[in-house]
Image (cartoon, rainbow, N blue to C red; front, side, top):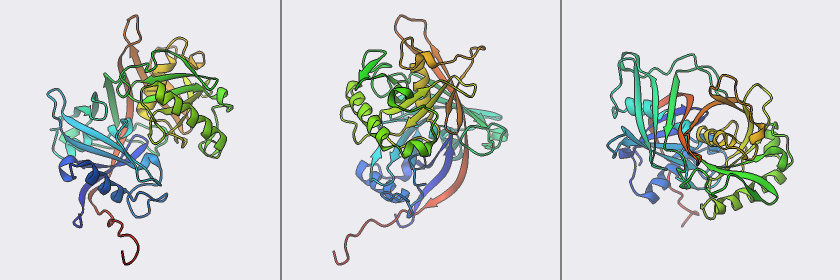
Length: 362
């Protein structure tokens, strides 16, 4: 790979990642993972010799290809790369990077743009579920500029409407993987949910915090990290995920009553590091849980009087999420919607570092 690899760096939502065409990368798992780790600069807490941003939300990869299915336009594989640890995980989706997949597909010529607006049906390979991304393409060109602001991102950009269907049980098989609305783990009431992202939801107060702490305060609380880990390890087994000690899911969201006009306040861990905001599909799952009668934290939810999208308050602002349930005896979700923004940062060639050669003379 001395000649480099074609790559587009994009901000998608509140994440940043490297976008590739599948045809430009090795197809085998070991070779692919090795290359991507060297491109990102992992393992290294600074990722100084790669394009990673030294935190989980900037150490991400989207691999895009023409869809193999009849009802979708493109396939999107998400990979979460470790920062200090040489790990590559495909056990989850990323709704933030998803916000740039449609535009990337147009830029690479996989999808033909509309005269004013383009909708792209995307198969999320990680969970074999479908999302539709809609964004402006005036004059049949992607326009990243606009007046939409999202919390956690400076300035404004063009809105990207994300519409999710068939995401419930995307990883665990069912919306409520344990078969119950609530479980008790180590004396803490939790709701284990999967509507696009496996999440363990608990009241912040039950873990000894307010739920309004800053990311720095949460990150400095080693005792809290230990409790979060104990919750997710047991929850992972209950959710059918097995041993999750080295996995990025399930994530944990600790909720509190809103205090800035939203529907709920959340502090999320990925899996033990505090999230600077909240993930798209993580937010969808959290709200899906809180809408269930009897769920952990359900009584804290404040529904908007107009019945519209609900704002999840997080450390950097809020995320508006809409969840529509079907009228059925068992909880079943018809669709979920989120508005994000995305922006192309650079398009060109990335050069991976050399493979580690070992000690001198080896």
